[in-house]
Amino acid sequence: MDILKDLREKAKANKKTIVLTEYDDKRVAEAAKIIQAEGIAVPLLLTPDKVDQKEKQRYIEEYYELRKAKGVDIESVRKLFADDPLYYGAMLAREGKVDGFISGASHTTADVCRAAITCIGLDPGMMIASSCFIMVVPDCVYGDNGAFIFADCGVVPDPNARQLACIAIASAELAEKVLGSRPRVALLSYSTKGSAKGKDVEKVQEAVKILKEMAPGLQADGELQSDAAIVPEIAGIKAPGSPVAGKANVLIFPNLEAGNICYKMTERLAKAKAVGPLLTGLKRPCSDLSRGCSAQDVVDCAAITALRCG
Image 1 (cartoon, helix red, strand yellow):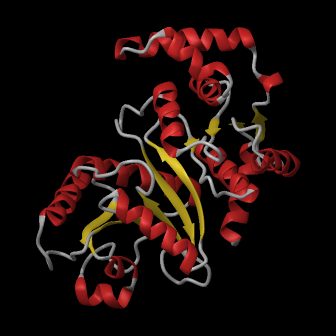
Image 2 (tube, rainbow, N blue to C red):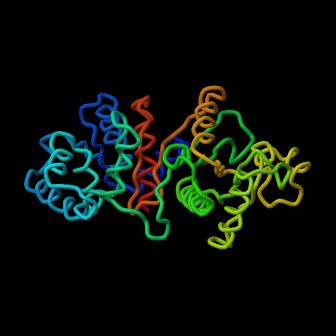
Image 3 (cartoon, rainbow, N blue to C red):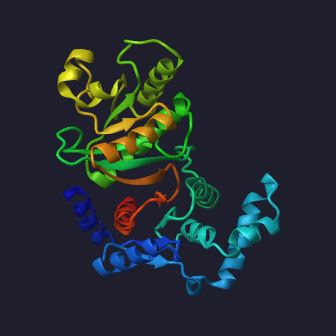
């Protein structure tokens, strides 16, 4: 997995402060030590002694002001901040006291997304939070020597056409910033260029139109079946003339079900490395973790989060 080693090395030059909220998870605590020792980033492991009580009270009041219009009461906010530093860490990121935010080893994706969206806020250019994985497939000639972005595999259950276009743009930006690759985006379907019909196919076709309007300079195409997207020989038969078919490195799935199933199957059957979910569409870089993650997965996630900080 030389790609991931390279990303760790690149992160060392960036030296960003990354907050890790799950101090009581052994994997996260071990990862913080590795991140510090290797100089990948400056880890802030939110042990109880790192939580400033005056600052915490200020964050409680600020969060209440942010959410009271939604019917949230002050007691509910106090409970959110009581024993779990998840929201405290997200507010640190909101205020810019840390560069990036990581959680999820012992929290669900829903918990992490809720904290990130409500505290950090959405990027006004996107207006939707989504996620992607960096997938590194060994001994693979497709993508960028086996490196891909898969999206959305963790957040949006059934994106509409405009949301799919936003997911594609956010994923392409991450590919360029982190992997240093020119993104070649394929919007996937069970159809290639009208080979099948249906509402789901029409949604992807509409997403491609919107995407080209929103990001005319982005190399993107669809609707494409997965083999037509990544295999040159198949692309020549199914989608001749496509600027993306046969060489896509950013794969946009039509819904969460397809994306989540595919990334897990790729991880297990192809022995691929999956790093993420990396949350996109937020004002600051934020990464979720799989609850099945290892300490090394957390280190990789921290390196990528640091690189996303610019």
